Amino acid sequence: MEKDTVTAIVMATLLEAKPFVLGMSLKQRRKEPFAVFQNDHILLIISGVGKANAAMATGYSCDKYHPVCVCNLGAAGATDVSHPLGAIFHINKIVEYDRHELTTRTPCIHNPDVLNGFQTATLSTSDMAVLAPDERKKISMNADLIDMEGASVAQACRKFNTKCFIFKFVSDTPDHASSEDVVENIRLHRSFFYDFFIRSVMPILHKL
Image (cartoon, rainbow, N blue to C red; front, side, top):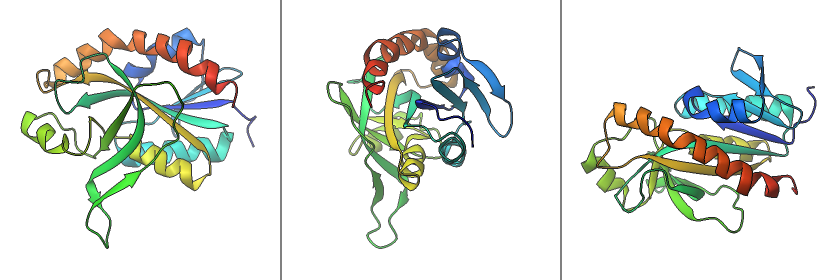
């Protein structure tokens, strides 16, 4: 069993994670089955994009490293223009837009753990990127933001009885829907997101 880690961070891509790796002086300890970066108190695992990758990476980190909590951090799309680029939200509810309960035929719902004092939002997680404005409009009836990992991280954490906290920053809106826009906006806002996490979230997590 590996040494217990205070906090595990699951992020989909190194593009999003770069400020965390540099700012926390994390050293890469593994490349397979996932890229793992560590210091004495933090484990950061790069899951890859999508539900299956996120679930496997979260399960791997919980089983191998036994963290006190898991934080799923990264970029998310906004379903409408009321959630501006760069804005940061703490996720208090997740809707799986593309996976329904077998009996009710309604979208699966997940409730991650919530810390007090942050602006909250509902997240929709699906296995396909949602960029088209008309698709965003449909999802906006049930969710504020869209990603491809959050629901799986929350579900895997529940299996391992591990606290799960999710924070997302807005990387795209109906007015900024191209893949190029998404990448550019991640680069533009990722450092501010890192600063927010270090300044506002980490002091609370240290007390868990």
